[in-house]
Length: 458
Image 1: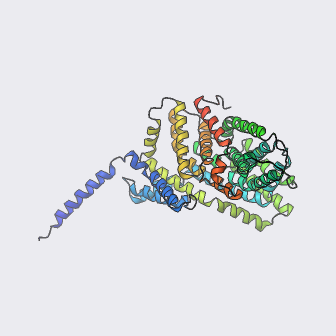
Image 2: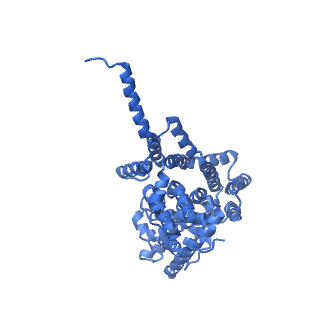
Image 3: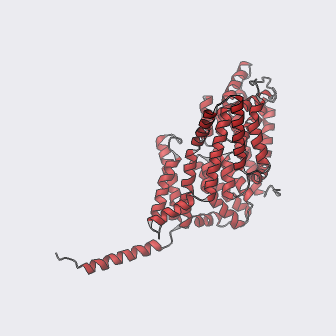
């Protein structure tokens, strides 16, 4: 066997490199460009099914694997260039601003809880509940509290134990039947929690929806309230009719009015149009003043609350950066253009474009069981569709938030339903069977798209 001369080896390797470079420079196919998303969904879903627990598998780990895969399949660039593209997406100014807001929101929520603002809000809501309007009062209380604190899970944690006690009191008073069961009372709280979560200025879903579409929170609120407000009114009327025979009125604890100031101030400043970072900073300062002067916490406790609040946002921050980087790689490879063309193929008007956005975020939420992540993942695609069809970005932000909250309220493996079921000692399926608000909200949101409502946003 002879030895191959060096010049032939050089020519051979030169040809191989040339063929590889030619292959590497060819445009990437649409499905291949989108495959990092499929990898993420497969890793998360398959792992969750195998573990029989959708919250045992960290979303950040699934995003990391998908991000590594996205960098690996990127063509026409060196490894350093691929990482640079990913870093540009992860460090995008909108992503970073969203992260700053998450940090401030976490700090505000934790310090507000530390000074007793949540307990004060719950006590106020329960104190004003009339007997025959018990169900409607509980629904409105959960709406108000979730809008104040910006989290459906926090509202559920605060009110579901109260709901369980109310169900026991109803049973002790002789009330029987499905409308006095723990599942029904718990479902009232869960439904109301999604109303506030969808509209709150400090909700992570609102933050994600507005930042991805570059609209102000006040503008998104003005559009959103016209869609979900009528739905909340219809559900309130339903609860008034169902509760007309109830005569039991629960009692709340003492109301410390000064501890309500942070939530009232945050809502008022946000509605006035002030920048959300300024609103949260002022709210944080007010929490500090109330806590330090009132003696409910010292300086060390205040700092510890801030730290725990920020830490609680840690996974969401990491996921936000990984999603931003991965989507930038997908965009660089033509995946965004491909999916926009696919979703808008055959669409001949704004109605179809809005329906495609609703379908996109709904599918993402079904797969991730996290409405904030669904919005972050699909926000950039929705923005491209909005530009292409001349949609109002305020309406797009509303659609993203509304439909993600709709799906989140209907999946039995969502954090809200799992938390509520655990606190009430019942199954998630029994809660879903008594949920009214998410279904009614979804119907009104769909009607708003089909009939192009609201017609005027300002």
